[in-house]
Image 1: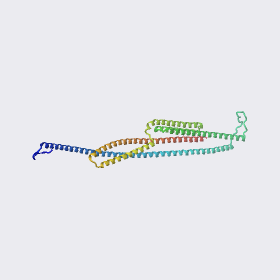
Image 2 (image 1 turned 90 degrees about the vertical axis):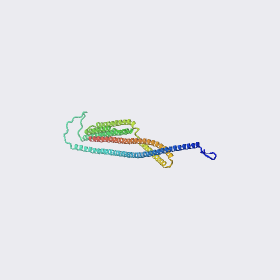
Image 3 (image 1 turned 120 degrees about the vertical axis):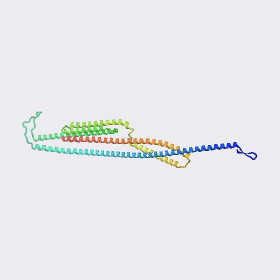
Image 4 (image 1 turned 180 degrees about the horizontal axis):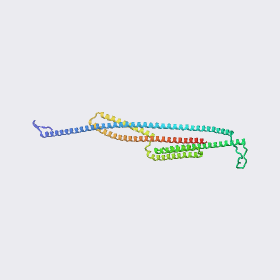
Length: 410
């Protein structure tokens, strides 16, 4: 409404209208001042939010660097474990070559033993011929007293006259008896050799069956030392017995040797069965720890894929953050968007970090279990091979020494 009123071309001031207009102006000024204060508060709030987002961004970058370093450390650890595995495989290959070399040595010793037996047979034949020649020469050059009035035989028959025919017949009987004794001893030696070969084959079959039935657990060093000492002591006792009594009979020596071999085999078999039972008891606790090589490789591939996915996810997050920081926008929308995005990314990074830590712990545990299982398997294979080779060498040496003493007795 107009402030001035026109009455007869005279301008008069309307006080009510003027006061109302002044009051409206004051209200408008107050509202403008309040809006200015609210805008200043919002501006301060947005600036503080922006500063907080910058701080969280820097902290997340630091965490990303730490995760990269941890990933590099895990790769280095994996490389070291792979080198250790390769070294263990090389050691296993060397042990296999050593076993093959020992088997070749055993085969060469067996051939040498056969050649020695043939050579001794030839020497025995030469000694026999020499003995025959000496006996013939002794008969021809015999000088001594002849007994007169020889006592008759027990059957009451008269003795025959001592002529060349009777002497030749007596010599033939003597040669026959010598040949029969030699043949009997040769047969006994052959029978004994066959029995020892049968015992050796049976021991080999039982050893292979026992060793291939189950994987033996980790052997205690004290028990293996006790077994080795007992076997060495029994071997030394047998060697002393064979060397100290070369004049004992063939049957008695054969029984002694076979009984000692069987006793040693029973001790070894009981020891292997006891270790097998211990391995079966321990296997229940260690079954979860031991993993095969194929499962280990599959787990490695799975972990590598997950690590690659994490890397790609982190790179995409970095690109999105960089794009958000580089895109121009007004402060309020930028603050709201950054706040929502950063909260989501923070929660997601926390979850990914937890999953990564769990996977790293599982990977370390599986790596440790695999290396322990590989080392334990290598030790068990070496001990098995060494026990087999020692038992084979001990049996062959016993057979060789025993046959040598028997030939010496003959």
